Image (tube, rainbow, N blue to C red; front, side, top):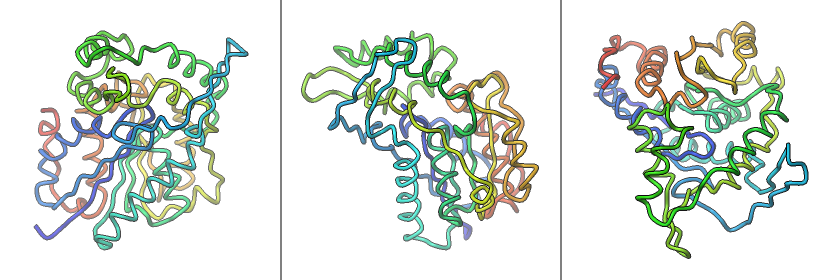
Length: 305
């Protein structure tokens, strides 16, 4: 097995590195990856999962009940997430500069990977991005909604068993694949050392502050910078992605960008709702990237386990 590649996974806001486990399991079992020595790397962004950070209190502003806002350093989203992605990528490249590095990101993680490649062209040898948050999404309305529902969510429980019971019955997670929900709970729930309670690693005020960030916007000069192929995926029911914007990018720079067909019956959280379909989408894209492109077509059934 002379060929090698590294897949770097970046999760979305409020999630954790474990949310990629159902997809990683399917990819590892696929025939496409059997002849390539593939390293899988996932990490927790700051304030998430194993990198929980409550050192700075979030300030909640309820002066406008219809438009609550939360102020916290995490709100400078594009800056710090891109810096963390670059750090991860450079560390991997320093170990093996000749091994292709392919980034796979969702939402916040997808935006960070994309921005990193535009700022530092050649960081990645391919990007597979699930709904990077970008463009004119009527941001004030979206922010009002996301901040409001996030602040209302329960986030502290006397025990892990009670947290588990609550999240399994939580309406917002009803469409999630059960394996994906298990993976989320494994990384997103932690025990608070001071109180002994089980809490969300990314507290609801800090998560809400993420939605108060200025959306990523790239000028044409920046959009033309990437040195790798970039694939975009989205859910058929999404309200957080503007397909026409990304089609325009693909039409203008077809050598860089490609907009894929939507993943059926899924929302912005498609990687958690449809891990089998998301895995197949990744495999399809990998087949167009080195060192996978000369390998045989993956068995579709192998990623539906």
